[in-house]
Image (cartoon, rainbow over all chains, first blue to last red; front, top):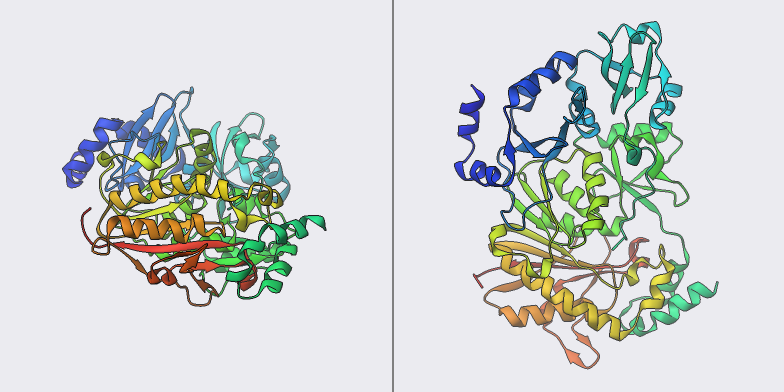
Length: 179
Length: 313
């Protein structure tokens, strides 16, 4: 089934409303990038439209999602790719969600490396870890079976720079009572 | 402990409607247990419990809410890697109640009218299995940042976020199957966590808030489809913000259009809403609302009303 056919299978009104709110993009080049780097199949994104809500990047929106026309939404769906960089980068949210589907450029961290990743410090990879990486570029990091986000692997140095956003590093305890 | 004395003093007006005043006062002196719930989009309650035990926590499953755990009050679950990775969310036990009463499903369109900071939004999104349409609204753009962090961290993809005055939420937003109004309130029920709330308590303040609360609930009823559900909740004791608000709206819309359904949860102790306050007689239907006092389940205090819209308005 082509993307066009899939889009046609969404209800017309859903797509029409979304088109008035956000720009639709040609998804294939972006999904190709993700597939080539991480081995995450394009079909993993079949349930979503790929849209551009702003200059910074792309979002995933479920095909049956029906946002309000008014008030115009501040956010629709889930952040997916940051595109305003030299190499487009998976967002941390997308890395945590789709990481389990990746087959390459995934690094399983030791506890000490995990601590460094969480505090946004660079760390060195062992030879075995480096073998999981194809070349310089983004890697998905996991701790046991839990995906934590994205790092930048530099093959010549054998290091990974943590790309965990500052806001994610240490959250204050969330309160149910911040009314 | 002058603070707890002032708590009891501040809440003395509720003595006639509390089943066990001593137990209530004692509960307010105790620290609040910490509660977390499993993000089932990412993991299972069993796996999360393993992680927590390995981290030196002792998770105690909640009997009434699958996948939620109570933890000792003196731990910080908000700065652990499982938290950062979105395996769980931290939320006070009693505030899990309003979304739990909504029984949302993956094919519904749901509105969370006063959504920031996003705890109940996240709970609803996960209950909908990250499908369907959840619209999270709050008038305060700044407070929506916290909500965005929550839904990002938990991997929520079925949500659109709007920043609008809920009391005037527009018709063009479309119809909703279910609407949650977790209204801004005087927060008396949070005194175990925020002792300063008692200083704000005054009848003037309650009455000021209740104007906003009525307007929010009125708009929620309008935006809900015929046959749909509306949940109204606050974390406060004041009847001016609870039963009186609901009673006014029942009268305004009429029995043919709006009715209360019993709000009860198996395994959670609660009291029925009151039908008399300050000389005013309310509809007998108000006993179907739910009051959760801190001593009943060792939580904060809450009020919840479950409403069904039975006709176009």
